Length: 158
Ligand SMILES: C=C(O[C@@H]1C=C(C(=O)O)C=C[C@H]1O)C(=O)O
Image (cartoon, rainbow, N blue to C red; front, top):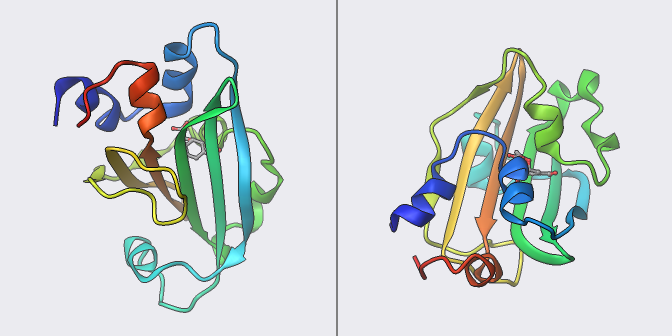
């Protein structure tokens, strides 16, 4: 992986904040693509130690600069732990804006993939996932960097 991409893929702070900064004058927007209770994919259930078939809260967004998606993300949280968090009211506010406000937030090691997002048509060089924990609450956050971002920031192909 090129150092330029490593700086993005391995960053452990808020991706939303980094995109806003990298976007300069461009307007940042979280476009909500889908948000509903549903069955996670087996690999997502595994990452959350969730029994397969158990319902979870699924949220898919595109992180856009001037309405062009640079990142697509899919987050999965076990429903029963969601009660107090009311994340379904997030709407077009970034999940990160809520996550990084939690005082005891823990983040698992970041896993990287060279595959594109299985839930979105746009391709890209790298994807990553990690589990954020805050008390009993856990959410798997999967983010896929798109070719559009590589073009706009003149990043290497990988
Ligand atoms: C986790 C963060 O939040 C971002 C925003 C998301 C959302 O609003 O659903 C999902 C994943 C992230 O790319 C972050 O800012 O790092």
